[in-house]
Length: 439
Image 1 (cartoon, rainbow, N blue to C red):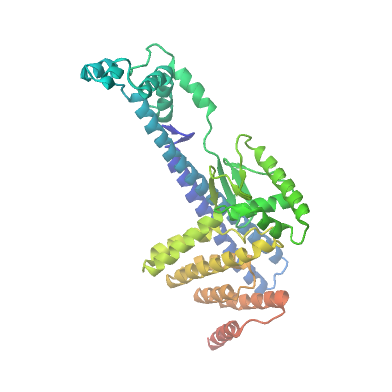
Image 2 (tube, rainbow, N blue to C red):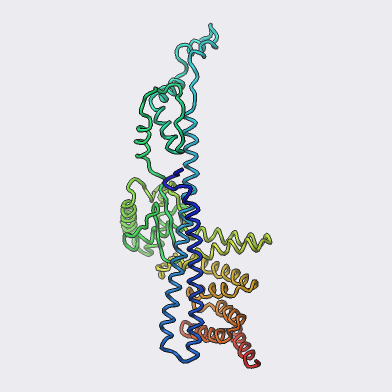
């Protein structure tokens, strides 16, 4: 049975695609880890000419893994939207079927039950109440179209005839014409962690207006649960500018933004204005990766407090997969993004740390290594990730990789901040050296 263009048979297929995307992502990351080990051995043996090639291959593996992660996130967003659409469609069917199958009472039967000398009963004898007559006219005019719509929403057999429905009408044709004019609830899915992407009804939006208009839309996405005063927008996006100039600039940016969104679907007002406030249309079905990341992170923390570590790790894993990169990474110099970006990065490092610690406890060192390598692609000066990598390499009997990781850490800190590694990191490196000398 079809439901909103999605057959039930495709659900297992989509689940299989998600599992395949996860599997391929892990395969790419494992391949990157093996290439890293090969490159280290190659450097130790003095074959330096091959090292740039191995390094480039490793980066390609990381990019391929990232693409698989994005595909997985897209499938999850689509599944959530289609599940809601399926539920709402069933609600529509229930109401339509109830209306289509409702039997009207017989006015003559009402006459016989009325008191002969009652003024109210006399009114019923002359045709019933105005509301009842209106329902009769409605069923006479639209009964078959309601039948057709009920069939269209469920795909079952046509309901039996009811009072007020004229036999012989071509009901399916009328219903099909009405259904063709309707459109599903518009949806919006936004990816703000890592490369910025927006999908309107599963279609990627590729043409955006100017920088200021796009920045406004990003702000509305991250603040979609509240209405934003235009004075707040003046201060955020045009600080120190004359109020009249602010008004003109905001008006132009909003106009450009609305025009760009209407190119996708002209019958929807995506951005509304009321009481001096701008906000996204509440009729939109909106999914934002930042919101789901926060929900998964909070769920994981609650499960940890409830002494359910396995379930907590599952939620943390889902949150970690959503973090494809820093918040709106292309908006490096937008002041309003900075605080939120730091909050999310701090949450991610906590989640990644808890996951990595769980992997180490279970001796799943390869999984911990992949997680640390991802963290270092986001921040190459993350000493916690460097130290954990050193521990994992040592646990796998690859002390040379652990010592090399210390050198990588020291080079990154010196290049970016002009500082040396912390005492904790230096002490770990010294301990590893002494262990090697003792053997």
